[in-house]
Image 1: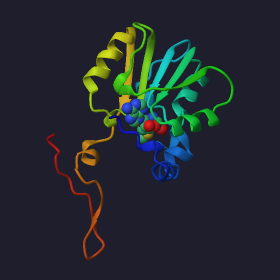
Image 2 (image 1 turned 30 degrees about the vertical axis):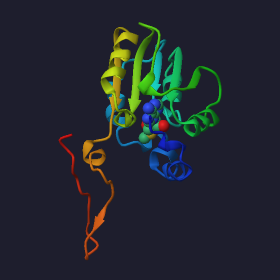
Image 3 (image 1 turned 120 degrees about the horizontal axis):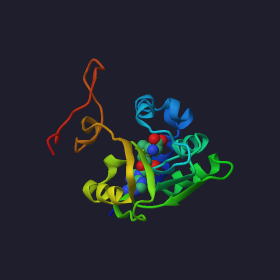
Image 4 (image 1 turned 180 degrees about the vertical axis):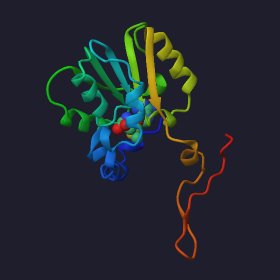
Length: 173
Ligand SMILES: C[S@@+](CC[C@H](N)C(=O)[O-])C[C@H]1O[C@@H](n2cnc3c(N)ncnc32)[C@H](O)[C@@H]1O
């Protein structure tokens, strides 16, 4: 079954304290690199995979995208996105990216930041995205580095001097 940790109230509250939640795209360390990869958005049909609070959806609309669709599996994230969005031009929809089906050749740009590492079946999603993109369309994405996601038990260790380390195992997998 697909994980949906962002609907866990404690996790959701913790996430709200992160810079990316408070400051938006400028608080997201990957944004300046991702922004450089983006094509011009004016008139484009854009889909944000795992849109969270919808920061990128609003950016794309403000850059003149014709249609913006924000997809997320978390009801709480989508409620927050809707609450933070005024005006027209963006649709938020609950979708599990593991099951995504979209109309063929209907999207100019898929954008996704720090969401795809949650998925079990990336090849199935990429096949869908390939079918859904118009010729010359793009997928621009970031994913969390496996140094964080590989360990079976994720958490800091502290030694007797308070020196912290992050143990990594299962990296090859
Ligand atoms: C770290 S947050 C990033 C949110 C947003 N992209 C950003 O950069 O601010 C990861 C998001 O991916 C969503 N997500 C994780 N697994 C998903 C899935 N299977 N289908 C749809 N969304 C998913 C989560 O609910 C969460 O909103």
